[in-house]
Length: 344
Ligand code: PHE
Image (tube, rainbow, N blue to C red):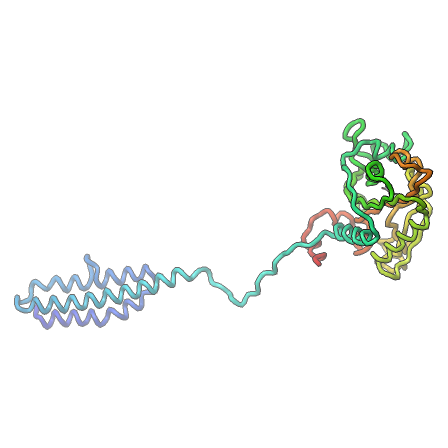
């Protein structure tokens, strides 16, 4: 081999190298190109250098220098390409669609029953009521006896009440909090007692074995049925709207005398009659009455000096008539598609 042939081979390699290096699309292809160009085993440069020894002695120095310059040039180009490929590999993940709208953030919503409770508390807070609570596992005396239930009252039957033992029950209403409050505080008393209650019912469209109630109690000197009626009517107008009509129907509870249930005009049909109000145009929202003197005495309050009135309402029933919910069980399902409608 002559020096010219040797140099021509080097020039050819130097000329083709840049395109081949640029064509390496990934690190794997880059490795192949590097091996083909400058690899020690079968690289083209190694092949050319193998001819060095066959050159005349005086040409070898120049040939070696030229070969080294080509090698340095190719290696620089290889390094640059590899850095570019590595950087691209580090930043490319799965294909990104930057025009895709961000997913809406779920910030949660207050349960419609809790919304009713909050609104009721707010309205009565304006009237000077404070909050009282009592235990859900309750002594039977607080749930029944102190509230003037006769010993054979049907509500105490196993079918309605969940007994935890002989004397312990899961409270069937929030009225025992009336007694606990009167035992603890002297009149004037104005409290609201929200809480869960339990009854031995199966789930059906209008019953649940556990539900919430809100109890209200007022005890003071000179408190009358007129106060009860005015306060509860005011509440209904604040809660359902200023033009809401109410009606009081005589009723019976062992712990109030006289007793009355309050109906409001059906919010779903406006009073014309629909499925929610069972075509009557009215929805019952609470039971109420003047605290029975025997209950005051059971709680240690002088019934000659003091009178009181009380009410109990079911926030779930109220939520149902507020929103026209067809089945009470929806309130217990925790279905986010239902609940997120109440985000405020
Ligand atoms: N405790 C009664 C019930 O659960 C409601 C009520 C409360 C009635 C207070 C009158 C006074 O049905």
